[in-house]
Length: 464
Image (cartoon, rainbow, N blue to C red):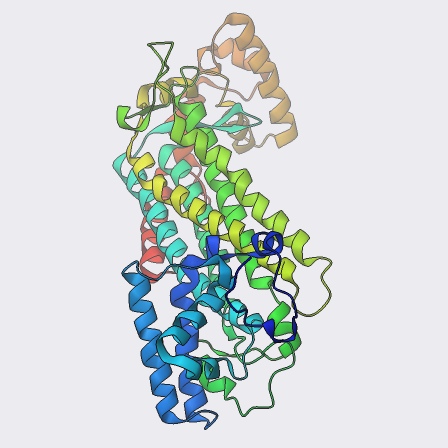
């Protein structure tokens, strides 16, 4: 049982039981909030002095002390003590040890409720910016991979069945679009951090002449929060970020799944550099895509944060409740996880060597040219439904003969439909099929080249 005084201990006749201290303490994961707690306190100290709530000399003394605490933390000399419960209590206790009773004036018009809300917003502002930079690097990785491998044809799939030929750059650009949407969602999450809760106090503001607008501007916010009750109970910004990270991780999981598939011997589309694979302790021949598998596997942990936070806030009455503390540890862990996953994407992409021969060969099996044959008949004036049925007949003939559509004779094609002609054979080549699909967003190489240029311009402009 700690002998150290609690910030709230005045009305209690008994010390806190050790089991309660151990159960409620949060310092084990709050160390990363120290610089943000001090940043908010520096603005608080300056505002109190400006408003005459404390003297200018006291304000200056508090700010100097806070800066000393920050330097101690940066040097590794200031460690959070569980006896002081949380980051706020620890900073104040250290300040009091330095300055004496004047340290107690810093908390005028402030509560730990608005303090933690502020700390988290300041912290998350930096974290979202870091996520945006990592997302940009992942986009850059896909663009570089596409530009290094122009003109490669590969099968596009639906239901994991070969469907139509595309080009490899088109596959890369699909992930670029996902990541740009992720960037947009992260930008929205950043925007939801724009209001400053400092000065909302416990839930009802303060009778002291606080200047909330000044502290909001000083701390880089757009405005102060509009309702003190909502200010300390709002965790929507955490939900926004958790949602954005969950969707981002879904995209990285899809990437991981496709790398695993395409690296397999069954597909053989990708070869992974030895530096980005692992082996088996039993089977000497194995070369396993562990990084891709972990990208796929770790997505569920990000989803866990979103479900956790939604469950946390769904039944809480206004305003602050201690349940909210439970959002922090998993939030911190998930941010570290997502940053690590994003960070591994560019080197993973750099480790991929597309196998042009295997991808091209796959395009020649499975009748990926069937739609092109139907489109040929449509250009001859045949209704699409009739063309669709005719190509189905041609496929049955080709299967019976053991060849592709381009292996059918002129007579066999005419048997499927009188408008068929051997003149369509060049149109059935995989690269011809992909090149013909010039509609906006399609996989024609000219489209892909233009889309790559546009994506680079969007990236330069930070335009999601």
